[in-house]
Image 1 (cartoon, rainbow, N blue to C red):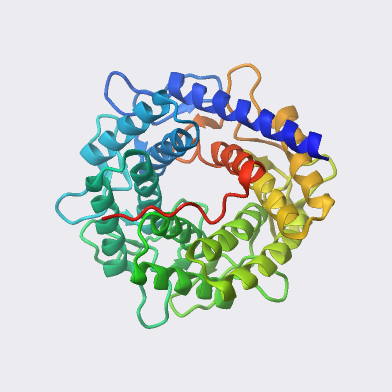
Image 2 (cartoon, rainbow, N blue to C red):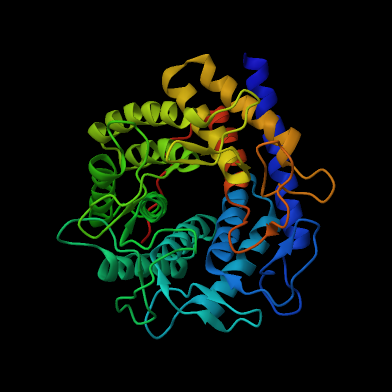
Length: 406
C-alpha cells in the first residue's frame, strides 16, 4: 500500500511539471500580452479570441500555487505576468471588481461583474500574496473581499447574488454560460466563493471573514446539500427555492473535500466534525456516476446519465476520493482515486500535443472541437489535483500554515 501511495506521489509530481510546462510554452501571448484566449486541441491558436477572467485568474492561481510548492522561479515569473495583465486589463478602476472578459487586444468586452469570476480573482490574489509577501497584493485581496460583501451578500436570507452590471446594479441575465439556469443563487458560485474566502483566511485571520465562511458553510448545510440524496442542488431563486433537479457528479465530489477544507482552515470544531461526515456522504452520492474503468460521469438529469468524462471531473474525483480515504481509512477510496488517475493516463492525457483533453465520450473517444486552452479550460483542476494529493501524501497539510496580512 505504501509503495502504491509513494508511486502515486511521484507520478503526480511529474504530471504537475508536464502540465505547467505545456502552459509555459503554449499559453503566453507574446504579441498582445498576457495569455492567449483560445488554443484548440491540436495547439492551433485563435489570435482573435477574447480573454476570460476565469482563465487568467486560474493561470495566476496555478503558477502561484506551483511556485509556493516547488519554489521554481519560472513559475513565479508566469504568475507575475498573469497578475500584471489582470491588473492592467481586468481590474475596473472606476467601479471596483474585475471585468468578466476582455477582447484579444485587452479592452473590456464583458464588463459585467460575475461573482464567480470575482471569487477566482480573489482566490488567485491570496495565493499570489503567499508567493510575494507583497502588502500591496494583500491590500488588493482585502479590497476585493469588501467589494464582494458590499454588493453581493444577501443580508436578509444569506448567500450571495450571482451577477451585476459594471456599476453593480441588478442585471437580468445572471448566467455563467448559456447552459446554466438563469437564477439568483447558484451552488457553483457559492462553492468557489467559499474556496476563495478560505484561501484568503489562510493569510488574513479576519473575524468578519471567518464569520462569512461559517455563513457559507451554513448555506451549504441548509440549502445546497440535499439531505435525502446527499447530492448538491445547483440552482435557486433569491428566496432559496430550488429550481433544478440536475445532478453534477463533478461538483459533488469537488464540494465534498472543499467544504471540509474550509472547516479545517477556520479551526471550527463543530463544522469540522459536520463537514467530515458530509464529505463521506457526498462522496458516496457522487459515486453513482462512477464507472468500472475508473472514470466519473459528468452529470445526471431526470435519471438520465450523461456518461461523458470531462477532464475537470476526473481531477476532482482524484482528490475527493483521496480525501475520503484519509477520513475513513477505507482502502476502496484510495483505489478509486488511483483508478481515476489510471483512467486519466489512458484516455484524458493528450500524448501527442500535451496537457489533458477536454474529455471523452461515453465510449472513451476524445470529444471533438474542444479547447485545450480557453474561457473554461485552464490549468486549475488538474494542476490542483496533482499539488493537493502530493501535499496530502507528504504531510496531511491541513490546516495550512497561517501567515497574517499586516
